[in-house]
Length: 166
Image 1 (cartoon, rainbow, N blue to C red):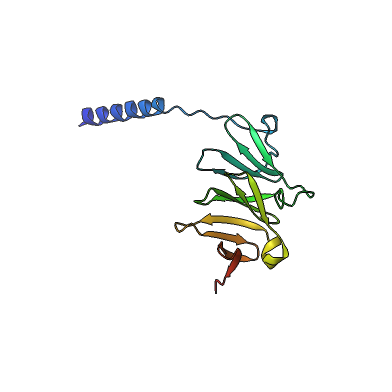
Image 2 (image 1 turned 30 degrees about the vertical axis):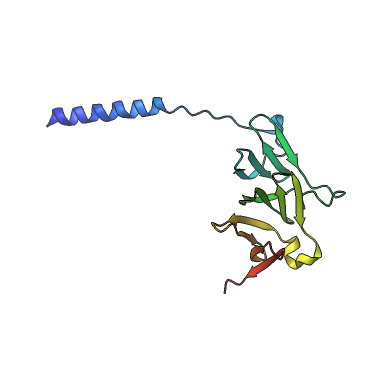
C-alpha cells in the first residue's frame, strides 16, 4: 500500500512539473512610453480583426501589437468621440465598434474608420447619459446600460428604446 501511495505521489509530482514546463506564458506591460494615452485602463476589448482596444480616462487606444492609434474628443470636430472617458466597448456583426463614454454613445465604423456620436438633441435624455455597459446579443441587437436606465438601439429608426425594468 505504501508503495502505491509513493508511486502515486511521484507520478502526480512528475505530471505537475511537466505541465508547468509545457506552458510558456509571455507577458509584457504597456504604458505611456509605449504610446498608451493614459495609464488608467477601464476597458480592454479585442475586435474580430485582432486589434486590442483600450478604453482609458483620456481616450480610446487601438493597439496592433506594436503601435497605438489614439481616438479622442475634439470640440472642433463633430465626428470625433463625444468624450475621452471610455467606459465600455462592444463590436456588432456589421464591424462597428460601439464606444460608451462618460458623455454618450459613439459608433466607430471599423471598415471606414469614421465615428458617429449619438449626442444630438433628437436622442433626448439618452444623448448625454453616461454609458457604462454595452453588449451585442445573438440577434445582433445593441443593448446599452446607462446611468439613466437600459436602452435597446433600433437601427431602422435610429432611435434608442428605453426598456422598462419594472
